[in-house]
Length: 105
Image (cartoon, rainbow, N blue to C red):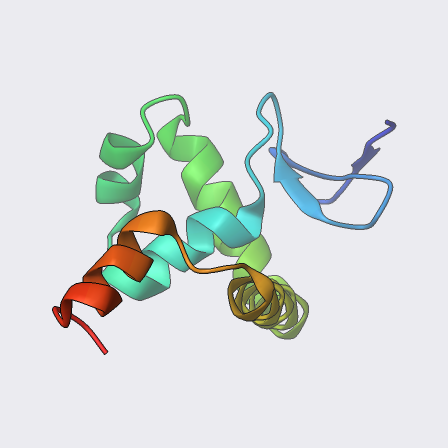
C-alpha cells in the first residue's frame, strides 16, 4: 500500500484517500471521533494515545479543520457500516440467554 504526503507534516493519505497519522495505522477520523465524543483536548488525546506525539495530534486536528466535511462524511459512513453489520449479525449467545430469562427484551 502506498501513501501520499499532504501539506500537513504528520498526515498522509492511503490508496483510498483515507488520512492517516504518519508512522501509525491510526486514521485521523479515529482521533477526531475521540475528540468529538469525549471533548478531549489535544493534551488529553496525547495522554490517551501515548504513541502519538503532541505535534502529531495537533497536525491531525489541523487536518480535520481543513477537511472537516470529508472527515465527517468518513465518520458517518463508518457508523452506517457498523449499524448495518450490527443488524446483520446473529444475536450473541449471552444476549439470547438474557432474552430467554426475561432479563432483557
